[in-house]
Image (cartoon, rainbow, N blue to C red):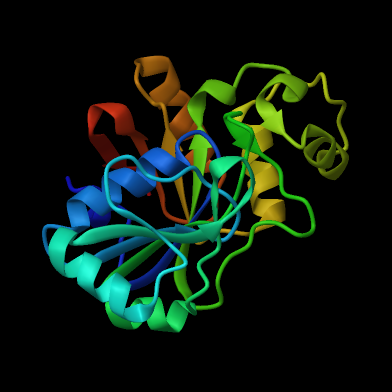
Length: 223
């Protein structure tokens, strides 16, 4: 099954948040969707410039249009610290007029598999028609302080200590509490144990859920 179909990605802006594979998901979706439409990849926080597509720094509308005509997919942003890209200077409504799909990484997680959000996070554009939350299956079965970015926030919300082992049932309760997403993708579900964990998480959530091994190009809808 195609990623875009499984995740019900529609034309317009799709925001990607969470941890455990956001950038990989964005790149995989961009590669898939470019076969049928023009695609813009960007962020509302900070990302490293993409290696698989042209990257435009503070471009004009005409420059984006010309690059899309040549390549079909481009990364657009403004200069940030440490060589990273930040939010585009062009409004999202303009980006939507230039491309059929705009994929936005709207979160950061310090490369940990699970993420709790501070009050200023995530930075989801108001134009977004869906917010996909990525969860890394490798974060389960470990103490919260080892697998969760901003672990103190999650621990306080759940009324547990940061040394508490993260179970799918516990994390489902936290994701329902945050309620920042429209859909969940459990990535890194590469073996039977991780797939069982993904199903247990899905059983406790109140939204559509898929599990995947994005590096292997595999995805399955759970509910």
